[in-house]
Length: 155
Image (cartoon, rainbow, N blue to C red; front, side, top):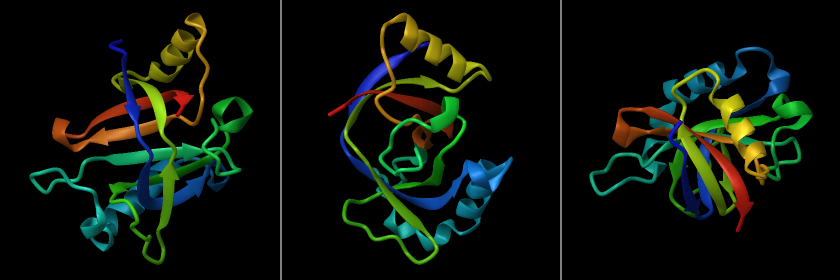
């Protein structure tokens, strides 16, 4: 497990929002909905110097919408399947916008089914606690490689 760290300034994501209250498979359904209707927000996506989106986020928050970790043992919370957007962008009708606070993260490739458990164990072993909700990041530059971002400090 190759753990890296970074500081990410506050950023915004526009996407399709749901919660664990929506039942099993809700995250997959959100991504399907976001992908089918992506053309509605494509022009809003923050892009790199080649015009490609900088990233797609599976952003998470507790039910208070304060970006704390999911509740009840990380089993209950909100999820936003979307794309990082330019600052000041408004969400079109039918879409939600979240602005994730500036945080320091540890992040890893999500390349095994036990990555969540492994990272939570790592945090505990090193005296670290989640400072916010875990986020998924799909990196377009790396052919859609999925990463998990674990916030360890709010800035």
